[in-house]
Image 1 (cartoon, rainbow, N blue to C red):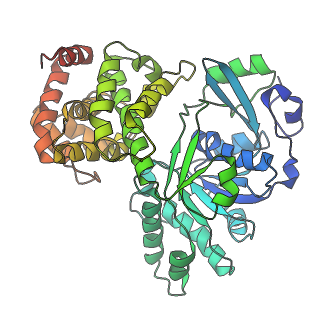
Image 2 (cartoon, rainbow, N blue to C red; image 1 turned 120 degrees about the horizontal axis):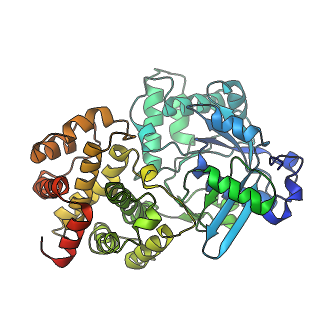
Image 3 (cartoon, one colour; image 1 turned 60 degrees about the horizontal axis):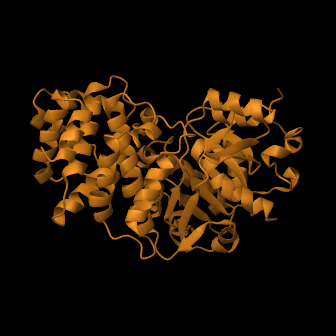
Length: 463
């Protein structure tokens, strides 16, 4: 069947194609990190802006590790389908918001041209937690690349824009500001560029939320049979989609398309990172240790499900102060329902990636906060132990610190494994030493018993 492209997209009416003229779209967004999440999340909000008549929200997406995603999108004239699925069925939409797909540094000349355009409104980022590590001396780092693009705008004498991180980091706007300004300082410029960035570039905090599994051939083939065209960039996701940003002038244009602007993102960010992401990571490691491929299977497993519920409601939800308009218990229930969506084949192995970069904010800090408040830490310490056991027993761990952490996690002395791994210098957050004995106890049990046996004992109160 035909590959989705500019000549046939309007004929696929059952997939809700754009009604606006693609030629009318202006590039107003530079996006770093052209993975599935951006295409299912921010690009969809920009698509709604375009469909509402605001032609200023076309996206130039930037891939950085390889050109594969850019080439795949360009083969389809940067058109692709987002298929929101749940038990009620499919809700496909052909998205035209991404008008250019580029590869840095190959296409840097074009990117500098866009950076100097008066049409540019904002830069968004989805590069995962590990890309924010301090490596400002490297010309290949994300902060240095952002600085390079901003410098072109500064040198053109244009006003500032918003730079919005959409990664799961606490205070992600403040972190982005810090790493970008540090990258600029390392260059030793004295031409006013740093002052311009500090005064004119806005770095609002933001919180993003949508479950987006990896693209699979099975989904592509199934969709092609149902809708009559082939889309190699097909995104399968859930109907739920949320974006919350600190108050910013962008609210005038993006507020009407569903982006929520609030006075302080932090409570919403904390709710999502801890109750959702902390749960997601925990479930992924429990599934990996139990031989369960998909988290949708794990969340309804009769042994894992009670543990996850109590982890959320008795520990994670009590580790912070939630927003005034959000009930953490109701939110936790919603999260479990979303994760259990049987139409989303979200592999536990995918979620288990990069634990050393994710768990400091998802589990380590919540555990420390619970301890400081004198609240239960039984299940969160077991969750941390599950990650350690996963590190030690899985030969194919995808994590930038795996070469450093796996050998020490495999120490036969469980106490030494816990101490040395969780106190490693490379981790941005250290687990409080008072929690290490409990984590050690769980790790010792995980080394001797199947996960399901341990969880059953815990629910019976026998351990």
